[in-house]
Each structure stands twice: as structure tokens, then as C-alpha cells.
Length: 298
Image (cartoon, rainbow, N blue to C red; front, side, top):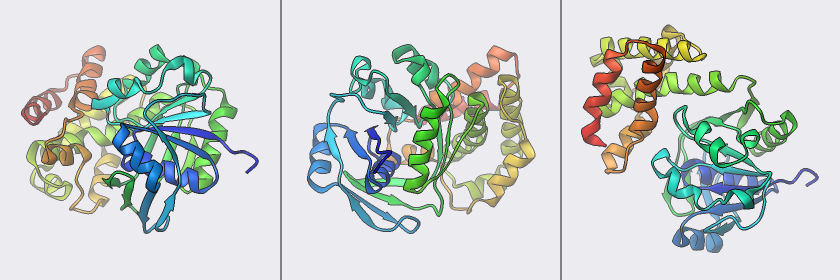
């Protein structure tokens, strides 16, 4: 293809594996970075995707334990709890001029990545999708949608557009947003109350929004005030309407991690929320209490 990209995927799990497979299927060169056991499985069998939206298919990918040559972009799709260790697989001198595209929850990771890589090549992304790695190289995409927002304050717009075009051609609806802060806080404003309360009570969203409605409302309002102070969107009524539109059985990824005994992204979500509140002098008593109550699960 004329506009073929070389793309590394750090952490080929539910999200990373899906994007790697979709990009590979449309003709891009994809190098997955992981531990040796997963890398061997990917080299041997490729990535198998089961998706009502994109079909059932197998995509061939390259796989290694470390990036050994420059690429156009490196998608960072590990959980925040694994970020520091995973980044050792992507040496900054090797990545060189390549974009760093983190698909991480929270709002603090872009600054950390800009301290490690070229600041004008860090392009944060937000993805709305439900996709799960059920085995190494096997991905189940469960949601009827996959939507990506790509941003990056100082990244040259042609670089963002080229990557967005590649994503869109591969399947996910993709747009480039000018305001990085607004993009990240739009996700944070929705995710934080949802993740914290479903994990705190061990209940799916339907039960949280009925049995703990007042607490959900208060937490949404606090989060909106913090987002507004940080330069992000603030619409508590819209957030509540979005929660009400989701299937009642919906669980957050943090809740699923708690159920499986995995490390929680509590600091990246709840901790970051409270640090932003303190920085801007925004009272957040409900958020502080709920974060404290979730700590034993972490």
C-alpha cells in the first residue's frame, strides 16, 4: 500500500492485540512487543480476532521482546500498573522520531512519557471499546463499536492525520482532536466515577446507578468540577445520562481487575483525580472517601 506505516504495539492484549490485528490486516507492518512467551505465540500463530463488528480473522504480525529499529509509531497499550517496566522494551534512541501513542487511562501519563521520549512526538489517544485478550494472541472484541480520539499538543498535524487515516481505514472510527487536555479529561470524567464505584461495591453499573444513585451523582459532580478547573469538559447531567444508557450488566476494567486479583489502576485514576483536585483547590470529599475505600482491593 502507498501509505504503509510501521507500527510497534507495546502490550498486545485486548486493545493492543485488536489494533495490531486490524492494522496488519490492512497492510501495515506491525511489530508486537511483549514477553518471550507471548512473542513466540504471536510469531507462530499470529493474532486471532473474534468480532461481530470486524469479523473473525487471523492476522500475521512480527513479535519481539524489545524494539530494535525505528518505527513510525509505537502504540502503548499496557495497563498503567505495568507502564514503567514495559517502557524498557522501547529504548528512546531506537524509537528516534517515531510517535509514542499511549492508550492509557488517566491524565498524568503524557507528562511522564514526554520526559522519556521526544515531547513533540507524544500523541495521547483515547479508545472506546470492549476488547479482551482471552489467551496469548487471541482477542474477543465484544462491543459493537471501536472509536479512537487522537491528540497531541505539539505533534505535527500531518503525523497525527497519517496515523488517524490508518486507524480509520483499519476499522475504528477515528478523529484528531486539537485540545489534548479536553480529550483526556472527557475520558477521565466518565471513567473515574464508573470505575471507582463499580469496584468499591463489586457491582455492575446497573446496580450502582440504582442502589447508589446519590453517591454516583455526587461523585460525577465532583469529577466535573475538577475537570472544569483543569480545562476539560464538565457536564454532570450528560455523564449521568451516558451511564443510564449503558447495559445494566456493564463492568469497569478496574472492577474486572479486582475480581481477578490483578493490580488496580487506582493511582492513575483515583489518585490522579485527587491530585488534580488538590492542585486547584476543589473540594472532593466523596472521591477521597471512595478512593480510600477501594485501597484494600488494590
